Length: 281
Image 1 (cartoon, one colour):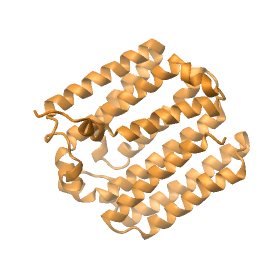
Image 2 (tube, one colour):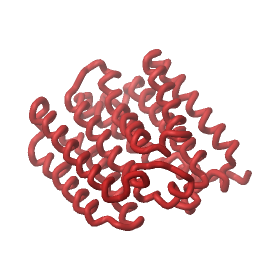
Image 3 (cartoon, helix red, strand yellow):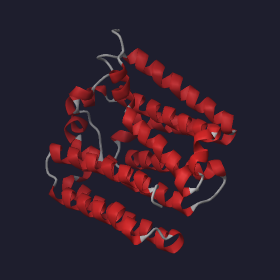
Image 4 (cartoon, helix red, strand yellow):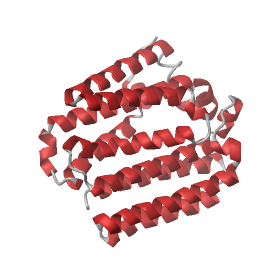
């Protein structure tokens, strides 16, 4: 195996996605739970965030490990495993950082360690089987993403409605993005017998399903906010209503792989805006 570059590792582990996860957890603790600068000296938060990031990175690695052939069709330029990193080393990296993530959980509590272990197992199961089935894989990834925010409530034992709202936000936006990515990846998925929603239902019905998710998402977040949290309306307009309207319009018009890719990237931007909005709450 040739020398593994930092760029290869960054692509393999989706480095910037990991940064967003860590930043989201720190901003949730700092601004939603009002701990502000104290978070920078909080060792428990650091350990929780590090374990979460490691397990997420392991999830990306094992996903790429099982998807080499599909990715060579859908995204050949992004394939790392089998080119610059061998399959054997990929499995080693996955196992090593998964174990470290679980052990870090024990430093906090056996319950966190158990959650981390279950997450590692579910991410393996997703990559090995569930992502090739309709909806259940999408739902699992969305649940795990929402869980990464909700864990801040668990860490500090302070049930906070804002944290719940942002967990819902992360859940729904991830669910939407995962389904959009399935629409983008239909060619490779069809070739290798995957049964994702766009393949089983077709694009039209899948879009209708996404419209329903967008509606439920907007209603759920609005209900929780105006019933319990009361985020100022201006923030709702800037960080939710406008982005959701733009996403819906782009979804209606999307009809090519390139457009679905841009839609997926827009989902990521909306998630980033949601993370940033914690500062203003």
